[in-house]
Image 1 (tube, rainbow, N blue to C red):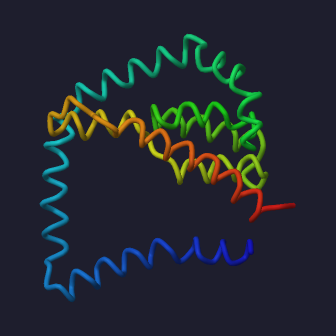
Image 2 (image 1 turned 180 degrees about the vertical axis):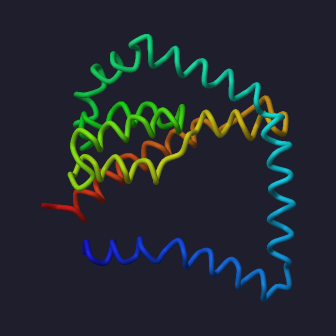
Image 3 (image 1 turned 90 degrees about the vertical axis):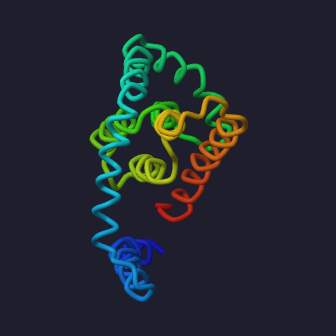
Length: 178
């Protein structure tokens, strides 16, 4: 099983890129020109969302540096063990919906402490790839188009995040069982 996962991970991204280029060619789309136009739009959007990003990063820094993250992790540890979530990855579970860069730092710390080939390291890596920075994404996209009422987006995104976390733990325990 592990050999199959390794081979799939090696060829997956190049296959997706080749598929997109081939599909665009077959449809008669000028892929390079469209990419350049998208990059120009990306710069405009980046400038537009900058105030939302600054506010989000400021709030995350306060959350992390005040010790609230550590306190929440300590409180949530007994409950998370019921769902099979290791306590070592709880800071990542809590931080990932808030900030991608902060959760990347937490993942780097987990990998440094436990090693990338450990079960904890693999669970953390899988969570990084299977969950989303919910609040960051909502601030960016909703801020870019001016949406102020989010309706059911946040609740659905949090349910999807929790599902991704639990699925990461279950799948890693099955695939990388030692």
